[in-house]
Length: 352
Image 1 (cartoon, helix red, strand yellow):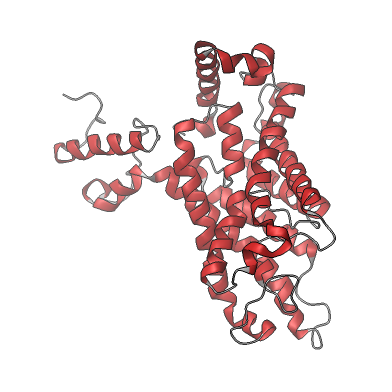
Image 2 (cartoon, helix red, strand yellow):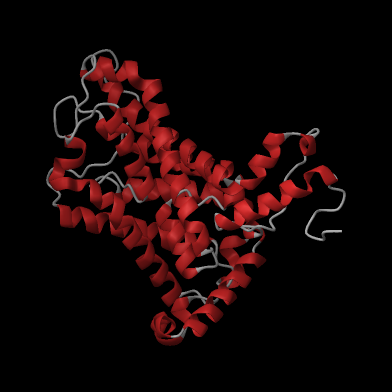
């Protein structure tokens, strides 16, 4: 008997299980992760088996889609309701509701994407691959699903608000800030007109670094007896407060992308929807800032937390703050193995 197959599995699915292992291995996913076939007659149906192959990427995709729908929806309501300012002078939203909307989106997205680890952010994904036990082989498929999820989330939000956009800006008119009647800021980020690109880059690095530092603190069971992890089921709610706080305190200058997928995916969607070349050229070709700066911020934020606080396996705790690992493949592999061993011991990361 093939001992890689679960006990009690019908023999007709033996070859399917091996195919599942091969596909998952090529995607960088754990080929031995257990299948979740608990539904009625799930063993006999095709879709549960397909879903089990891509369960983490699909969960990540849907989590990002939901997060972007909440966040962009909050911006849409705050902006587009201004068209009725004469009847409703208080509108239906402001910067506070935008920050809370994104916070709620992240919280619900984490609940939705639980099977994937719920990173919802390529910058956070990369930081976990660099400093924690997240496999580098998983990074490409996670990146793809995160960008795709943000793209779809923006399209769905647009479909919901297209009539309101026409009412606000004019039928079929699609403009980009700082033009009058612009609506592209519902989906993508732009800096305030007085903020130069260098300052905007710093702002995004700063906000994303703070986000990454906070996430690492919440997941750290080596500090203060793991006090931050004492109520692990509250992690999504904690992320709501963190994200809403970052938006409230540091979001105004650049609209706090803090997530390359959250901006670039919707930007591509807006290009398809007719927002034009200005989407890429305005504000001194600003589009690259929310795409690049969050990665820089996440790497810096992770380094700062590990340098000052983290006592577990991390490159920062290796020779010469990790620099020595760059020159010794064996040392780097030993450090990575230790990080992955710690990672797998955490209940929420088992199988991820």
